[in-house]
Length: 437
View (cartoon, one colour):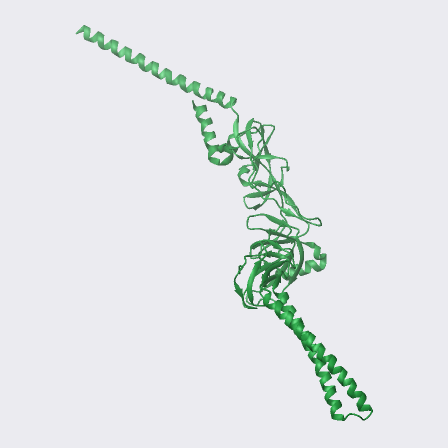
C-alpha cells in the first residue's frame, strides 16, 4: 500500500513539472514572436506600385454626338453602253481627279465617229456646190436673165446645205463625246471603294453604279445643338470672334483630335420636334482618322485651356485631418496633404499639394508609412496620343505604343506584377508569410 502511494505522488509531481514547462514555453514564444516579426518588418521594404500625375484640360466643354460625312461623294455611272474592257484602279486606293478608272469597248463608238466625219465632208461638198449655184443665179437675176423662182430655189438649196453642214458637225461632236465617255475618269479626288463591275461585263448607260468615290480631306462632322446652346455660342462668337471656340473630336478608340476645326455653318431652321439645330463643321483630315459614316464625340469649349493635375482616386486616402496621398521620392514614402476638386472619370482634380513631377502610390498604400523606405515600381498609364494642329501640318508620333510600362528599377516586363494586379497580391502574400515565419 505504501508503494502505491509513493508511485502516485511521483506521477503527480512529474505531471506538474511537465505542465509547468509547457506553460513556460508558450509564454516565452509569445514574448519573442512579436519582437522577431518586428525585426523582419524593419529589415524588409514594402513593395508598392506608383504612378505619375496627368496634366489635362478641365475647362468646361459641351459634348455632342457627331456623324462623320464626306463633303463630296460620287457614284461612278457609265454614260454609254458596252462591255467593260479594262478596270484600271486598285480597290480601296486613293485616286486623283482625272485618273482613268474604266474603259468601255470603243470600236463601235470609234466607227460612229468616222461615219460622222464622212457625213460632214459630204455636207461640206454639197454646200460648196449650192453656194456656187446661188451666186450664179444671183448674178443672172440682177441682169434679168433668170427668173425669180429659179433664184429662190438656188437660195433655198444654199441655206439648206449650210444647215446640213452644221448638223453634220453637231453629229460628229456627239459621236466624239460618246467615244470620250468610253474612258471613265474620276470626277473628284478621294478614296474609291469596291469595283461593282468587273472586266467583260456589259453595262448600260445611266443604269448602274460602277464604283463610289468619297472625299476624306477635308471632311465634315454633323451634330445637333439645342436652341439655347446655339444662341449662347452665337453670342460668344460675336463678342470674342470665331477664333474663341475650340473643338475636340474623340474617336471611337479614345484618341483625341484637337485644333482641326476649319469652318462651320448651321442649318437654316430649328427642328421643331427636337428643338435642336444642325451644325456642320469642316475639319482637316491629313491623317485619315475621320472616316465617313463613323460616329464620334464632339467637344466644344473656349479656346483658352484650363490645365490642371489629375490624381488617380486609388491614390487618395482620408483621415480625420482630410485627404492625403503618399508620394515616393528617392525610395522614401512621404505623406502629402492635398486639396481636391471635381471628379473626372477615375481621377480627381488636384488644386494644391502636388506637382506634375510627383509619383503617388496607387497600390500598397496601407503598407507604406511616412518616412519609410519602399520598393517602388513605376506604372505608366495606357494612353493614346493626341493629334493636335494649329498652323503647321499634324504629325503623328512615330512611336506610339498602345500600352507601355516604364520601370523605376530593373524588373522583368513579363512579370505578373506589371501585367495584372493578381501578381501584386501574390507578392504581398509572400511577404506576409515570410514575416509570420
